[in-house]
Amino acid sequence: MTAAAHQRISYDTVPYPTFAQRQTHPDRLAVQATLLGMTPAPVERCRVLELACGDGSNLVPMAFHLPGSEFVGVDRAGAPIERARRMTADLGLGNVRFLQRSIAELPEDLGTFDYLIAHGVYSWVPPEVQEALLAACRRHLSPGGVAFVSYNTYPGNHLRQMVREMMLFHVRGVDEPARVLEQGIALARFVAESQSKPDAYGQLLRTELERFLTVDGNYLLHDTLEEHNLPVYFHEFAERAARHGLQYLSEADFHEMLDWGFQPEVSRTLGQLGGNRIAREQYLDFLKCRCFRQTLLCHQGTPLDLSLRPELARRFLVAGPSRPETDRVDLGQRTPERFVHPQGASLRTDWPVAKAAFLLLGERWPRAIPFDELLRLALAGVPEEAAGLPEPDAALELGAMLLRAYASGLIELHLHTPAAIPPAGENPTASALTRWEVAAGRRRVTGLYHSTMSVDDEPTARLLGWADGSRTRAALREEVARCLSDPAEIRMPEGRQAASLEEARSFLLGSFDRTVDRLVQVGLLVA
Image 1: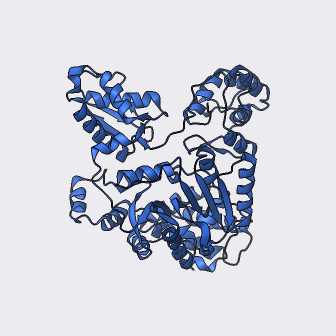
Image 2: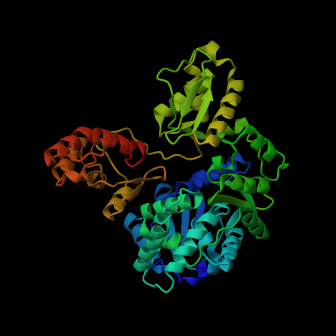
Image 3: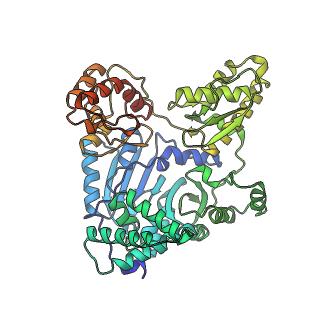
């Protein structure tokens, strides 16, 4: 049984759940290109093309927050394009437009773009459309442009393809999407729960079943049970891109290219590849059993510099939520301190200036600080004798440290950051974009930093929907509490249920300011 034996599931009748993808933002693409020696177009004044854009949930927020840039979205399905156009019109945006076209039939006069995005499409179209996609990257990417292409990879997808093919065999001849989903999951459950031995096969099936039961059903239909799901080895993708005049730049997540976490002999062995980046990346996929890649491409012949020179750090704004492991950090001594990201990345340093810099980043998160300002503040925060280096040398040392921290995922580097980053004021205000998303019934809303937050409780949705700047914090608090009608709407500490409506309202009133501060932190309230 192959994927081609099952009919295509229409994106018009079964909507694909879409939302903002931070890793596709021009700022992320520009940072990666700058780190590797390119001079990308300014994020504030660029042209962006998204292929298979769906309903615009990724592209419209970019256009909303980057009014000086131009955006074009293309998708074959009519219903998503109509939703994208309606969202654009409701928000009054004049810098984004949407075309209902196949990737293989893009208009000749489309022009060139500084950033091209093809997220979640390459592996889910037939081979001839895959070739058309890479040809479009070649044709419509500006000379210094960056293309983002995501796709499923082997060896990790060998395991998932096995489960997919079993499910497709079971639903052969079933046409109605709801039944396809129901029967596909039923088969996965039957096979997983029939395993009596605690072996690798049983563990694989149970892991996949757990994944199926936690994702949106429409996502599962399109990603796992679609007609086409064609993973590739990375080296195959790189060779196909090269045939279209494109070269490998990097991964959208820089840390994915590192061999950290393996034993030193692994790094030494990979180092024997003599600078062959394609082979090294392929071996990393073998080591990590990688299932998915988010690859950046540029034109062949574009000069790249892979040395990651410390002075590059001066070009960036720096942000990071890192926190020290200890309560008191000694900035006067070479006492080692480990700084940890909420998602687990960490870095250890004993240099007082670096410790002061990471403390500043944590205190100001999510606001980004220009490198030179961060250096100045960090130097001012430690005793002169503790700095240990004159300012020019300290700049190089801090630059090298920050590049290591970025590579590990501890901090973020930016070339652009939103100007409207507020304090928690007396008249909390959500952007028109966020209020539109809430009014449309969406439960994943987009913040200033092109990241999304799940709004899965009604009081927070009401707060964001009503926070148009006309109400004070106190008025919003009372209005949200007054509309509370069910204790189950409130998420109490430790997951317990409120005993009464009065208890739920009391908790809501008492935690309201903390909720507002949290929404500021994730960029859902703006100046």
